Image (tube, rainbow, N blue to C red; front, side, top):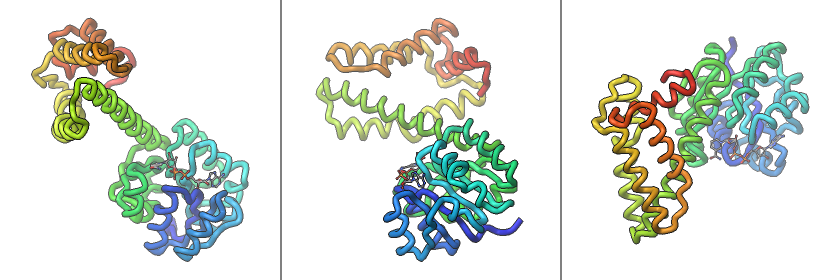
Length: 298
Ligand code: NAD
């Protein structure tokens, strides 16, 4: 299969602009399209790219078309209602680098395959700052031959390529990582508000939380990798002690009138798992509570 040289890039927004900029700097021939015409034109002027008059035009003669669009609905609209899928040459690859719903990704891949067009999901983690210095983490899924063809483009935009497996699974991983980060963010703010109600200094709390919850203390590093995936269950702390600590946090919040919805749910889950599995079990064994309910095994 031929190397990718000519790229249609659709969605020159906050992320698309710096990502496409990296491709242009590294010598790919870009044709860009965005419904926000001034943005697309400003980009093209800065980087010497071509501006397409429509999504379909961005796909004409392209080796690959990259989407950095809001979601899967817009991706499907562009492909199937704006004529892009018809315009792309057979053997070309479409790549959805935005955060889209994985079921839609699989459906779109099957529909494009019937037209002889490849499909890869390759969402990114890192945001605008890391897009600007080409240090995004890029998760890729789909046919391995197609991903290999895309590798030089990914190398131009990111620092690491995470090969995820079947089409759609990179979109799953992206959604899961954002879900974890979104929960952790709210959880941290909830906890810090409780601390403030007790008079703790916000900067001190932020520094202490960084030291005591991240790095070597992060649950993935401290629990999931050494104790859950290995089934060692040997952290040395019983489930009932964690359940007790979460309850202390929730009771403390309630005593000062701080809202603690995530804390209340977390306390319920630790309590229910202790009841089901036994409170003296190692707390890393709580994974079995989810495995019992879902039938999945980590
Ligand atoms: P954005 O809104 O800045 O950019 C989206 C662009 O798509 C806009 O320029 C918009 O005009 C264009 N667009 C919308 N409909 C279109 C259409 N029909 N045809 C052509 N262009 C169209 O969004 P963003 O922040 O760049 O995010 C893009 C994707 O990347 C999203 O899926 C987002 O979840 C994901 N993402 C964002 C970040 C971030 O930090 N912003 C980080 C990682 C992933």
